[in-house]
Image (tube, rainbow, N blue to C red):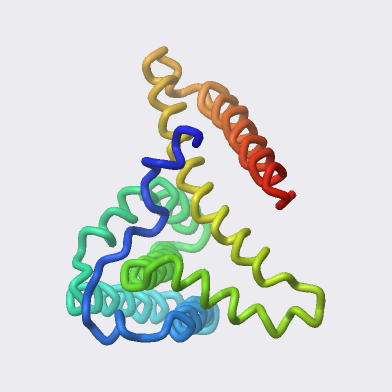
Length: 214
């Protein structure tokens, strides 16, 4: 197995065993609720004035933090996601602040944090195999349209394992560039990351083809 698949950090946090209502809820229900929350966050940001949207989405973020505490997940997984994505949040906030003002910037960042934290709570209260099984089961009615549910599950599995690997490669490329004094050169960061990502994808493709899953 290639380096990175073993010790890459989880994308949205690891499963935290518990007996809360959220833990006991069916995976399909939680996935549907996650989709509804993401849709609601988008509608709030689009339909309400910027200040009202920022307040409503901020309240949603606080509610998710409270839910994490009540379910026993705690604040650590949520804060870990902020540490991993602070640069993206900062960039979005800067662009929105420049284009539309502080209220819009707060609304956009709050909406993204709400979706990220909600997804973290789903993965923290549901084993990944249960999530994948739920998605595969939900895709079975589409078999008549030519959709292979097992391949859908395989694609999601590869996504969940590959995205953290790319994050690890990016971090290693950043460290290597900093060691050479090239931390401000985007080519020193992006080129090695792209090359190693392509190599990883080719390795995964070869492994799938060897098992007849090309």
